[in-house]
Image (cartoon, rainbow, N blue to C red; front, top):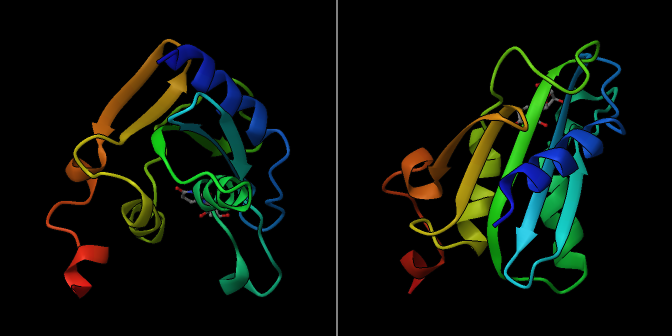
Length: 139
Ligand code: THU
C-alpha cells in the first residue's frame, strides 16, 4: 500500500469540502482491495444534523460503484486555513467507525490519521472500535 499517495489523495479531496458552518474541512481517501481510491469530504448543511462526514462520503461513493472490499482509509482535517499539513490528527467519529464496521474486517482494515504525508498514525478498525456490533451479530 502506498500510504503517502493515499494521504495526498485525502489532502486533495479536502480542498472540495463544503464546511461553511464549522469551517473545519476534512478529506478522506478510501483504498479498495483492487487498488482504486475513492475520495470524500465533509458536506455540511444549514440543518446541522444533515451534515455528512468525509469518511462516509468516500464509502458511499465507492458503494455506488459496487465496491465492497476495502483495505484502508486516510483521513486529514483541520480549520479551513490549514492547507496541506495539519496541526492535529482527525480521528473518525463514532458513526463513521460503525459504517466502516459494516463493510470491513476490523482486524485488517487500516485507518491512517495524517497531519502530512510524512506524519501519520496507523490503526486497525478493531483498535478504534473494539468489541463492536456488526452484521454477524444479527445471525
Ligand atoms: N467531520 C468529518 O468529516 N469527519 C470526522 O471524522 C470528524 C468530523 C466533519 C463533520 C463536520 O462537518 C466537521 O467535521 C466538524 O465536526
